[in-house]
Length: 502
Image (spheres, rainbow, N blue to C red):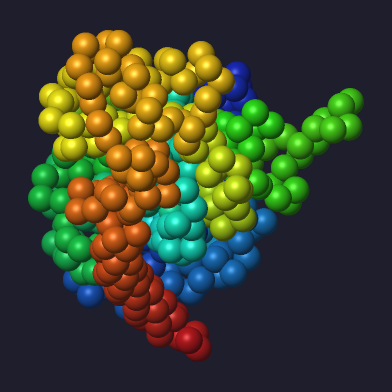
C-alpha cells in the first residue's frame, strides 16, 4: 500500500498520525470547507476555460460535477484521513465522478496553499460582514435608548465611588461612541482581507497563463495580492480582525460590568427583565444576570484566540507551514462566531434594560456627587481659588456626613461655618445658589458645550451618532450588494457552462 495522495511518498500515513492528527481536523473542518472549495472551484474552472487552459468539454464536465457535489452536500463524501485534508478528499470524490483525466485537471495552476489562503479570506470576509451587521443593529438600539433616557439623572462613578451626576442616556452614549470606534476598526479590516491570493500557487505563482483578476472578480475580491509568497505566508488580516473584535468584546464586557453593579440589590438603579436572567437550583430568590456574565466571558474567548494567533505566528518562517497558517488560528473561527453572538446578546440587553429613575435620582441627591459644583460656585461667587474651594468643600462633605446629612441638605450656613473654621475668613453665598449647586438635575443641565450630560450636549452627540450610523449602514449595504452580485454572476456562469438552468 502506498500514499493515496503522492507518487513521491512510498509509505502511507501512519495510522496513529491519521487517527490522532488528521482525522479530528478533517471531521471538524470539512463542513465549513466544502462550500468554500466549491465556490473557488467554480471561479477557477471558468478562468481556466477563458484562458484556454481547459477545453470546453473538460470545463463543462467539471462544472457539472462541481454542481452535483454541491447539491449532494457533505453526505456525498466519505472522509478519509489517509487523504490528509478537506481538499484532497474533495478532489478524490470529484475524480470518482468524472475520472482522473477530467477531475485531475481542476487543480491546474493551483496549490492547496493558495486555495486555503483564499478559503480563509472568504471565510474571514463573511465573518467580518456578519459582525458588522449586528454591530450596526446594536448601535441603533443604543441610540434609541440614549434618546429615551437622556433625562434620567443618575450618579456617575469613578473608582466605583460617587463622582458627578450624569444621565443614563449620557452613560449609554459613552458606549455608543466606543462601539463606533470598534466598528470602524473591524470594517476597515475588509479592505485588507478582501484581496485574492488565488494564483499565487505554492509560493511563487505559476507558469500557466492564468488571469488572477478574473478569479478575483468572480469571488468578489477587490484585487489580487501582488506578492505570491506574501499571499501564502500571511494571515495578518485574521490577527487584525481578532484584535478589533477583542476590543469590541472588551467594550461589551465593561458595559456588562456596569450593568451588573447597577442591577444589584445594593445599587438598584437598573432593572433587567426576567427574560435575560436565570435562577439558582437551590436558592429560590435568585435572579442571576447570566446574559451579562456571558458578555464578560466573551471578551476572554476572543482575546484568547488573538493571543493564540500571535503566539503561534511569532517564530515561524515567512512561508506556508501548518504552524504558521493553520494551527495558530485553531480557535479563530469559534471566537469570531462567539464575538458575533455576544453582540447580538448585548443588543437584547440594551433594548430591555430600564433605569430606575427615582432610585437613581435619590442616590445622586444623597451621595455628594454634586460636590464639584459647590466648589465651582465658591470660585465664581466667593472669589476662592479652586484649591481653596476644593479643600473647603471636602471639609463640608466630611462634616455633613458626620452629622448624618445628605448632599441636598448642605446649605449656605454650613458652608459659611466651615469656611470660618477652616480658612479663617467669612464666605457668603446665597441660599438659592447653594441649593442649585447641590441639585443634581440642575447640575446635569449646567454642563453644556463640553461633551457633558446636559440635554443640549447629549442631543448633539446623538445627532452625530445617528448620522454616522446611517453612513456606515449605507456603506456596508453597498459592499454586501456588490458581493451578492458577484455571487449571482458566478453562479449563472457556472450553470450556463454546465448546461443547467439558472
